[in-house]
Image (tube, rainbow over all chains, first blue to last red; front, side, top):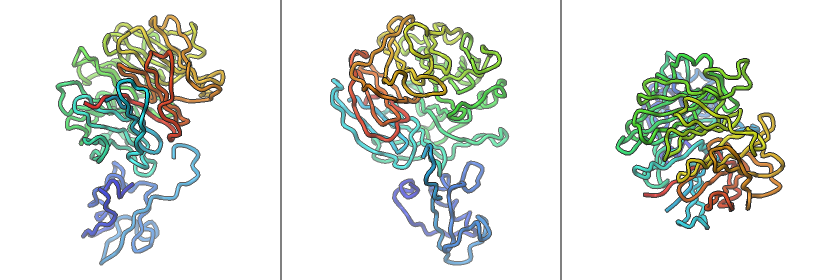
Length: 82
Length: 354
């Protein structure tokens, strides 16, 4: 869904000081963050394969050519509305 | 060319036909992955708008100017931080009147209304409603505190209505600057005071397009008609309806005394009664109702959601949570299945390509 909302583009190269800044520069930033600027609960972010929740959170600085992946959380089996 | 927009839990489908409305072609899904709570074609320019929601990516509005080929998404839809509220769901998009260029209205949860003056790119909170003096008496229904009905008076550019579950109906005489509760005579049987000023659980509110002082509503607690812009309401049951409980209501633009409802057994068993998918029709302003189910499946245990019925000059349409769309082109005398095996249907809206 994110790629479709980004016009079909699946990969972006951006320059940013933090993970949050990198994500905010995307054309889908308002799907990734809620209206208060918080990362949506069911959006998982990995920096070089490590979940940001295990590594400094969304404000962690970027130091080089890190790869950031955005993945919708696994929420299978919900009985209603999915 | 008539077409019907069908919003589902898994995207948007478009049903197309000719003026006879006998054969329907199904295309879609569009907006894959999104739950389409409502979709509408703006009669002013044919643009499509959807109230779209995702359990991962939140609530938004999409717009297409090319019949669904490409879509743009609204900028962030925000509630003022001082309200302490955040947008939970978008529910209904209502295009403005002819001449109100770029204006649209958007209803959402929790009990909020937005206005756009740039064709849905940005949305401004209608603060007179979010800060309404009765708001502390509003409560969410099972679907959240949804602002699901937005009706514009076709004859008076300042008069409009919204309905919220479970806050009731509100009328504005000044283009949305202020709102008056319009619930006199409407029951809230689940409240200690069964006729409160606000708190009624409206399920769907409609203004008759040719007789705008006449309003209809399907409520949690009965079916109602008002003939004075919602100042007073008359309950219309005990006269042929198997139940006062249901969600959608549809009208006939050429007959202000006609209406269609699809009753369910009750609040604790939300399925069509008697194992039959039954549409009930009145042609006398709700004084009596008759079953109009020729062509509808039986036995059937169905549910039709509040946004899942619509009408135009050529027919009445509704969609079930079981994924079927039924329509009548003869005022309810006979029904046919226009589509089947769709995902659970959330909304149905008839329109014509310009």
